[in-house]
Image 1 (cartoon, helix red, strand yellow):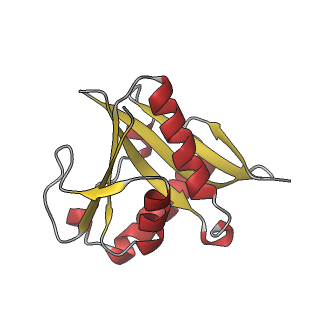
Image 2 (spheres, helix red, strand yellow):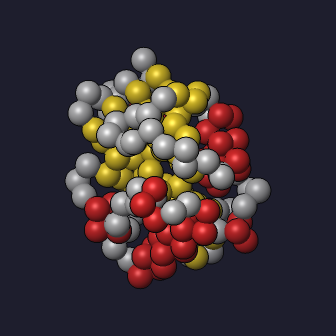
Length: 152
């Protein structure tokens, strides 16, 4: 059975566990003061839509669209379990985020990722994102890499 991706609430035990895995993975590569995690509760806010990838019912990947003023959307909480990497799940989630952003009339997508995440950079660059300077209210840091994509 193929991996299925759908909008879901993050307030589910298996999604909480997936997000905890994501947080642990990020903290292995980036100091805590330079990790900008949304909590599961923040992910459940009205300004955020969460996509969950499931393989036979098991949550194996996630990503979210967080809306900001100025018709800007932010790609957040992107993660695929190591057991499912290389199957284009991240690319599919980014595609879903972009499609929703376009449907809602957002004009620009932005994101912050770590400086030690080359696999993530590949996903974003293949999706048409370009590196840029700091976005939103993120500080300029050696630990961060920023991307943007115009939807206009």
